[in-house]
Amino acid sequence: FRSVSQSRYHGGLSDIEHGILRTVGDPRERFDEDALRILRAIRFASRFGFDIDIDTLRAVKDLAHTVTTTSIERIRDELFKTISYGSDKFSCALELMDACGLWELIVPEIKLTGEKIRSLHALDTKVPEKVFAVLMQDMTIKTIELLCRRLTFTLKEMKTISFIVSSMPLYTELESIDRQ
Image (cartoon, rainbow, N blue to C red; front, side, top):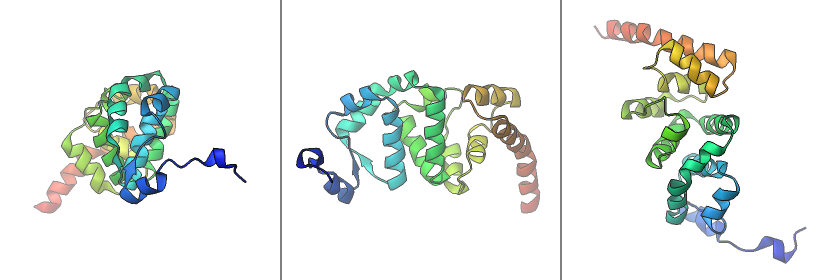
């Protein structure tokens, strides 16, 4: 049971009907309370295909740098949750993160390209190791291992990503032979 004062109307139903994501109250205050909410906003927008309200998006861009004050484990967990909706949704989230300057703050080692984003969109997977293998495909195994450690991936996740990336040239060669 909720009292009337606890269930104030904020226009959430209208926003859902119109596909708009916005914070309750001032977005800067919400993001100052917990910078991880910036990544959550992007996760929810990409999951549901919502547009981010202009004031909320402005706050995301202005406060993107504050995400780096959040523990890398919480950031990794948020990325994995976004991947769990599918690599097509994650590719949309990547585009948003890139446009807001978030990706280069979180994972500057991985340079996003249109080809990587298109590959993820078409990949149709919910497996984080496969997604990160696509993102890390142009890295050396040593660099992959260092990045996986920094992102606090498990040893199994790191080995899986390394294996997939090391197998990619072979896959590309086999694919070109099939076309001949």
